[in-house]
Image (cartoon, rainbow, N blue to C red; front, side, top):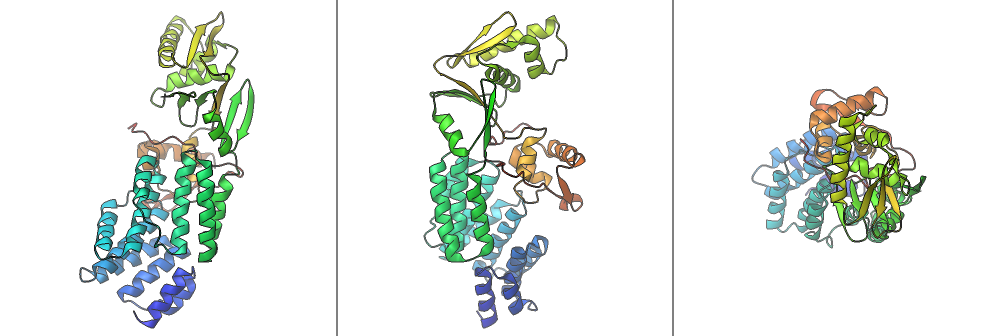
Length: 406
């Protein structure tokens, strides 16, 4: 490695892309192209960065497999940051294997870390945890160590393990201080603030309360019967029943839980479950059928009884009935929640993360754009969507895992 390349590499490791470009901006050899690509990525020009890294990989060719594999890892990171979640993961896996074979444990571990980040973004927590367990973070330099700990915290947050999340963020803060990279320090601080912002809203006996993540965790551990409108499940201290694929039953369960201990009139239930503006005999017959189905599903958790006005819920062993909802509920809330992370998303990446069809997501984006809640840049396949974060509220922490609905 010649002196300018070494100096540029040190500048990039210190988070100084402009300093790195001062050394290699006019060079066209493979090593310089790779470092220029990384510098452009740090400066936010992801399109130019991707082009430079691809050129570097071609320039290294088959004669330099390790350097070429490192370029593939860099390209994967650029794709992840630009929310190109459909980027071929087989190439990253092949690069990781090449790095392992040649003893480059640090970059091989970083390739695994990128895989975990992608799985976390698309909501595959079980796979992310298994992949994370295979990573040895001990050889990571401080910046990579901080990024690794942020992923550990991200998984812990989504698993509602706030103590583990706080410990991981504390380790990330120490590593970020050692790395002395301002952008990394800001990212760690942003992750830390997530734990101090409302993550959900509880509704019990007609009263609404905003909850921090720790309070959500405590609610799940309590003896209350919880109708979780974030993940579309009903849970008590002994069991969890998923109604994610049965929206009518969940709508009925939520309406009954919000009114508990009072009953809910039949016309209200019809409106909540079926969107009916008026009721006739067929509507009431359908309501009886669906209530019977809900009664069977929740038979070990709560009883559902008919009243003169409608129906009422009676928890079997729980002392309280609580509805857990997102802090802000609106049309296309899940799409909006994904966009408020501050990154620019493509519609295909959003579809992959949410487990919906790209056309469904595109219709939601068009509706949100018409109301001024999101904005787009670019055209065609290069179009990306963003939205400003909602001050004081978390975004995707309690979204359900994606379902195959199309």
